[in-house]
Amino acid sequence: MTAAFLSTFDRFTIAPMLVTIAADLRVSLAGASVAASLYFLLYGLMQPVWGILSDRLGRVRVIRLALVLALVPGLLSAFAPNLAVLVVARALAGGLFAAVIPASLVYIGDTVPLGVRQRALANQLASSGVATGLATAGAGLAAYLGLWRLAFAVPVLASFVLGLLLARLPEPERENEERGALARIGLFLKNPWAVLVVLLALAEGGVILGFLTYLAPALEAGGYGAAVAGLAVGLFGVGTLIWTRATGRVTERFGKGGAILLGGALLAAGYAVGAASQGFSGIAVSAFLVGGGFSFMHPTLQNWATEVAPDARATVISFFAAALFVGSGISTVLAAPLAENGAFPLLFGLAATTALPLGLAGALARRRYAK
Image (cartoon, rainbow, N blue to C red; front, side):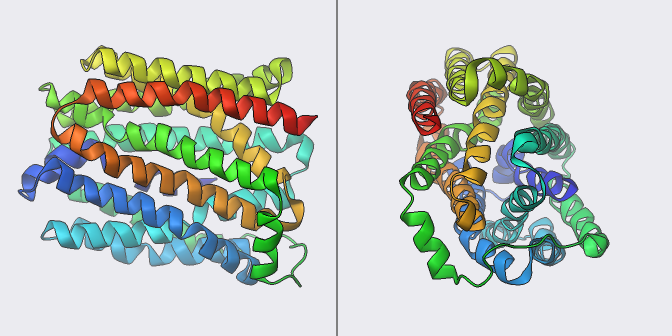
């Protein structure tokens, strides 16, 4: 859980600092956004690679390896003299931190019984929510104080120490180790439900994490400082933490399909508020509601990914995580010109109009799968 916390913390540091980084490095906002986009893309594309390695080397070993090696690109990000170096460093950091979430999810799938697995996943999501809130608020403050480089160094230093300490964590037993990587990918591709879950994750990543990147720049475009923007967007993490407490009760009463549908509705409402107002209250409410949508939709889809193909669990989860962050990277790139031109109402309006159909499609699919 701590490893997932640090991975999430590193991932969410850059968004509140984009405007400050662009000014310090004398580049456009769209140019600075490339550093975030490539981080998300490499974070996503490396998921299957790390999934295969975790089957061969072990879940804990892969997490430790990634946490230790992330020190190098993390410090390179902190001392980057120009945008090119920063983009490469962030991409490498994303590729390494990509190992943490899927390996930890598979670890939960390997060690936690199905009946209580969603609760364990929700607890991990709550931890990530805290990390998101602290990262956005802390990074915003760091940018305001002119210490944005420090925000890149802190999580990788902590990750390095944790990577050393995790040597004591035992490896879980792994099933079907005799199957090769291609065989497990084949099992995944032959399972239509597994493929559908991954496609839903692709859309989810684009709607939630991609458009979320621009909440802080939208607020700064209105004249607010980076610290205030980070504080407002930090309510995404607060919202995730608070709403996660209700996930279990909603799932028990309305089913997993109902949780996904509610998640889509909250996402649509959140981005609609952001489209209507880019002031402090509008962005803060938007972040809080989007956090709620994430807390209902994501762990439900995530839990589905852990159960849909038990014989290829690590492979499905790695592709699920890959799709989530590739989707976020793609939408970040596509939305960058709108952000550069200050067209934030249109940008968030597009997110809102996509979120509700996503929730509806996911809910219907999950209910049909249950039958």
